[in-house]
Length: 133
Image (cartoon, rainbow, N blue to C red; front, side):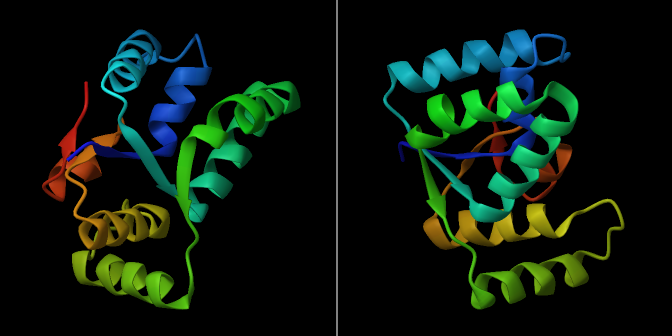
């Protein structure tokens, strides 16, 4: 499997030099490029990422994210079926800290048989995925 799911937490770490995980994220990203990994994410992660990057780093960072990073990520556009699958998973887990964005991510990863996540979020490991470090 050469496809990796990309989470907001990794993108924030990659784009924010002040993030505690920045150096690790940059190293992981270089490894992913060298192995020519296919990067996959969802439209929910996309919305969450643009919002957080805009709030924390500004609109220039959003422009850079849009033009330099997102074109290399395959986006799964969340439809009603995936939204409901994520909501079902969220409710089944019963964890207040788990977000709908993450639950949809897990549903997409399982459906696409993705095992690895470029993420700095313990929920991915708790769900049984390998978090790249």
